[in-house]
Length: 238
Image (cartoon, rainbow, N blue to C red; front, side, top):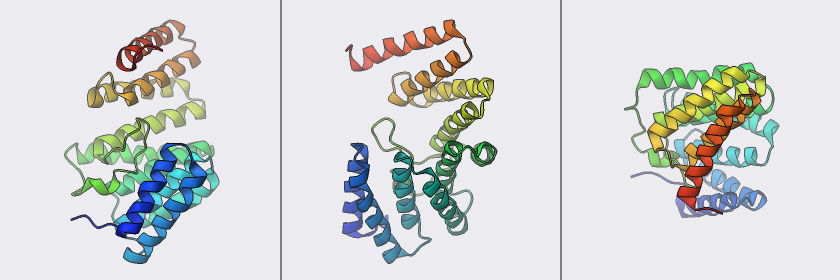
């Protein structure tokens, strides 16, 4: 069975993530920080559970815009993941994704691009059959854009890496490259999760925005109209 960080650690994690989901970051931080401390005490610095707890705390700090702090912690967490779990472990891929998008926010575009492209290269080599023996241990580390936890998988890690690369290209001023990547992300999410999934709708919004940046107004309007129509059908008209 999957090891945890004790009942107290699990409770702290649940409470912290609940606060985080409500946007109450200050209230969430002491709980996720304490959960990390408990994991370190029980399992050590380089145990998978400890590293996942560190990733959760890093994501919370990212949500607060504390990018310099996240960069330092992210490098440390990634190094530990690589040593303890290996380059092909999904926890390592999650750590790379998290650090990559942080580097984008800090303007380190070349480093972010290199790191995120490594994920796609390994995902392509691994194939879609690769997965953790117990992926539930990573189910809270991949982002909560749809309001639900995402289980770590090769496909999810690759999709997130492509989305992060698109954002990196956009911030870098490579609008044409960003448009191609956002289109690829949208197509992949349609395939993986369907046209009506919240993440697919968010990808449509991203794609419409980058089309506007290209002054491709007709296509942007078409995508936006499709987004509105689908959202009204799925969630109901306002």
